Length: 113
Length: 110
Image (cartoon, rainbow over all chains, first blue to last red; front, side, top):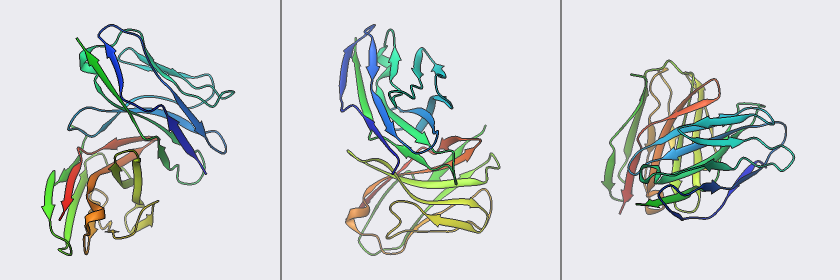
């Protein structure tokens, strides 16, 4: 079945460091790919998305490129801030049937000053 | 403001005592769903609804019920809660491929 694999956390970085959180997927067909962010005590918020191969999603300095050849959607940011500390979820939505959303297990990011 | 609301946000209960977690959205979305979030497991879908009076099981439906009598509301019912239902629950609604999540309900079943 469809699945999403994320790197284990926590990822601990100093402010202004470069961030990469790896995400790979397995899916039939051509899924849409998403990154959601969960700040402490809050629900999930959509961070960015990409709906077809080679699309780049971007928002708030974060970006991710839909790589069909490597089935990956890695999240990157050039310079993280303390306020980026959160849990990040990679997810896919199939384009068949009712478009179920499948989540990875989440990666906690901790940014220190 | 477009939003998904859930109540209560926190709940402590005892085994076997029926409870309902409410969910409401003001975006006129047809699709709504419930997830539970557990450490190391990410989010798993419990139930979903494609529209009023149309509901179906997700990946982990055992021990839960839902109803969809109105488009905006999608309550989650635990008829006889057990400790393994202690979790963080999220309601979500969806439009054009993007899901909007509620703030979550943290449930502890003793």
